[in-house]
Length: 222
Image 1 (cartoon, rainbow, N blue to C red):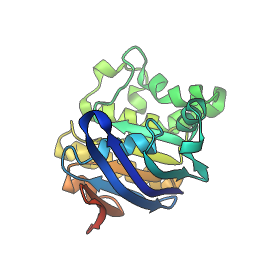
Image 2: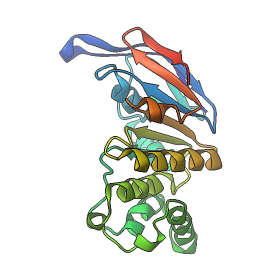
Image 3: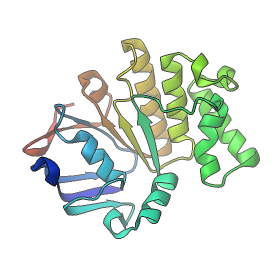
């Protein structure tokens, strides 16, 4: 589970508080959206949850591990093993085939051989890219690249998946397909999913919606 307690974050250089008194609890298998205006702190919150930054005040606890108590090496290992990331810009490695891009998290976690190949095949089939396994990203459409990125984020069965505007570069039909794939896989693996988005349509595919503003984080109707 993920628990965020009384989180505060300021940036001294900008002389402003970005996050104020943020608390949130998410159980395994729950999928939530965080919406808000540009500059409301959504990306800052994701960076804190990922352990890429540290809060001024408050705690972030993932499956019993307080991120603030971990050093940089331990946080890196936690991200590698327990987290998956889906970005708006895909971030596929252009010199690797689709298959090798998807297999990368397994390789980083020391998983190879038949077990790795079986898991990669399973994810490529789930996102409809088995026929493109030997293609390089440059040969894929935007929707295909995002599906490959989604498979890469999920292949190592992370306990927490952070998706930052994953459909921002996609047309409406392709976006709907990617969002359905993401939801299906999160539920199947009982992973926690956090979707940061400006899209009300994307947010509506989640179990719960929270609005982030200068006043804090508040529940919004689905």
